[in-house]
Length: 486
Image (cartoon, rainbow, N blue to C red; front, side, top):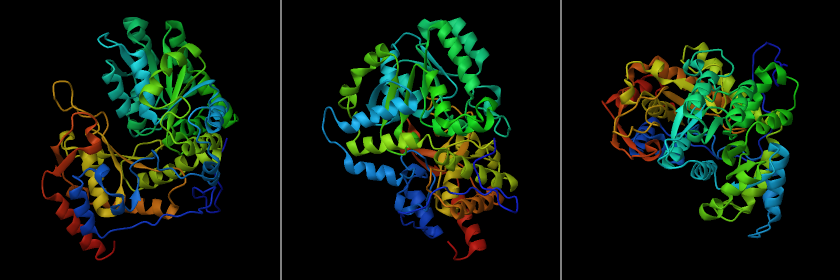
């Protein structure tokens, strides 16, 4: 099956937007001296930058995807009844149609779903572990808060950043089998699979791999939990890369994946381009086990912390996830950017995944040791020279161990998220240009050190400072080459 794209006469791959822009938001590109001041005030943490200081916001795709006209229209017919809301019934029907799950618990976002699942199935002081293809920051925090331990059973290919392997998000089946034999089901409450492994480059898993995991869980009597927040992009890659599914519809692939899981959960900020989230299952006993925590922590069972307008938009957005022109937009723009940077020698994660373009900061800045946070330094440097806000996905995103020791991350990545239907191709080409320029001048970039460090999820609000005066030297070089140009 060929990719969903229009062929250009010169043979060039150019992603073509299958939508038109009808509502716009003004952007602001500050002069470089003001950008330097802004990142200094933000403690060299791109999370703490004010949006008014950002030109292209590539921090995340969470809650930043563009909503469709149909989603916005649906918000006008929301039913604000506290209980028995017609809006909730429409969302519940979408859950049934799209995910093929009968029982649904709404929550205010994905990490709330992780909290409910962790608190329900993990027992404190029991030595339980949660195997997964790779952790996500909030997932790990909630598992540990509940008394469990995350065990990443990724394949050997997963950390090979420069690769052509189509499914680096697979779990290692032999490692999983050995773990189950050693620990037994009593110490493994569930196995978690993440569609589109966030922290290793948005890499997908195959349905073949998911089936193998399901076989093991059924044999052992262990639950299989599937994070479907990025399932749209994972489905797109399955359709492109897994021969069995070349000619299957998006809905058929979606149902195949979700039917293999006992429980699915999601962040609506990703999968439906709205706020909110949810948990779904076909097992009534599992539904009941989790149900009572939703009113306690989230809200009543017909809204779970979401507004009714978000609920209406989510229902429409879930149906739109079955549209290939919707779920292919972000992967095709990412592919374009990754391939252009790769051609210019910039070390990027390949093959292109979902969520964003991931730059290998260790290879980009080999002179910066892991404990001086090369991915964080690269994020700050790129903002200074471009106004582009990316996200550090490296050691800063990894909390210290129980003894207070710093733990270098498996990968030091700068993620440049590409939300659905947000950026134009000229903006993507601007990203290419500034990243390539920074790569040529990479020796000017230095490390960072913490000056204010929270104990948990420090990457959100921690503050850092440069280890030397490298930021000023970088600004001088930029002015030397670009003059007064922004």
